[in-house]
Image 1 (spheres, helix red, strand yellow):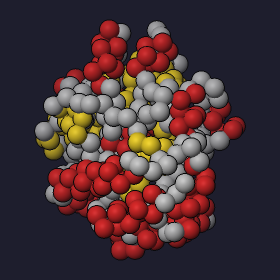
Image 2 (cartoon, helix red, strand yellow):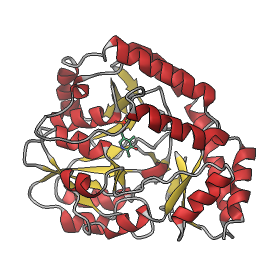
Image 3 (cartoon, rainbow, N blue to C red):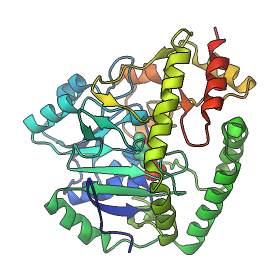
Image 4 (cartoon, rainbow, N blue to C red):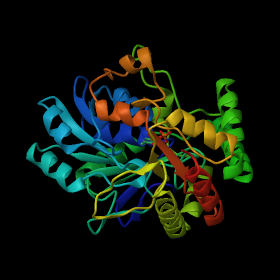
Amino acid sequence: MQSGNLTDTGQELLYYRGRVALFHILKALDIETGDQVATQAFTCSAVPEGIIASGARPLYIDIKAGQVNMDPDDLARKIGPQTKAIIVQHTFGIPAEMNEIARIASNQNLPIIEDCCHVSSTQYDGKSLGTFGIAAFYSHEWGKPIPCGLGGSLSVSNSKLLSALSRQYNSTSPPPKIKDIRQQLQYVAFSALYRPAFFWHLRNAFQLLSRKGLAEGNYHQIDESVGPSSEFAMRMSSMAAKRLAKKRLAIDGIASHSQALGEIYKSRLSNSSFSMVAEPTLSATAYSRFPIWSDDKSRALAFAKSRNAELADWYSTPIHPFKDKELEQIRYMTGTCPNAELACNRILSLPTHAKTSPKEAERIASTLQTFT
Ligand SMILES: *Cc1c(COP(=O)(O)O)cnc(C)c1O
């Protein structure tokens, strides 16, 4: 049985992807066509994909200047009578300003859904992320802190929402066998091959394979005239659920490792051409990746690549990886979230996952220290 686990954050349900879990939360909240769901720009296309599949429209909120999470002031400014829910993303595992956002949400009587796709285990003001809203969702895709191939989960503490979700869950089914086996092979290959020194090679290989349809990519074109993909009716396969359960046994180690690497990057890069991203003082962050700010992002990337140091560029657009016309299709209007647009041209991120040893983190940091 893959559903029905009682966790410390509430009841849990397992889905094919994180965006599928989000879609089910919105459905269970009775979100309807024409409703708006607030979500931050400086995110990936998975989030608006889940919103649009539910029939609603994303309302993009800017991030705080020089940071990576939602600006509460911009949220208060932009929400209106059509707004029916607020998705709060904890980018890179760094907590959003939950106290302020919760105040705004409760004034307007709006439910908060936490996007915990980058969260392993982070405390904010004495409470775990994932316990502030009516529900939280997670992704267990390759690049996330607790991966199992592809996968998503949600936790819910509200009993009315839980019964709606359980009813919906009964009409989901596992992915077709062939999809599941391909995913498992991808997972095994990735786990065996991946290490930071191979980052640039694997990145090229994965992009090539998913373009050729040989690997499950993460980004879909959004075409509202076609309607939501059949993936939105899929739960997690039992094989993926087993891998997830096993992976979760290591969650405390994963969180403390990523915290420790964050400390290495902070101390080694404090006197460099990169600057650090501000975080709420109330938090103890386990980073899914460690963000740094550069005034010359493209040159920094080329520098890291030439020295074989892992450095990622996302999010490179306000709704990664969409550009130009595709941004309009998911209803992002250029100019509406200037801080997010600037961050796309400035933010880079360093690895904090289990395959990055403290020694490798030191090497990456000392390489980047020499970048001027
Ligand atoms: C990965 C991710 C998701 C969902 O990803 P899936 O591929 O659907 O599992 C949602 N939000 C954020 C911020 C993410 O990074």
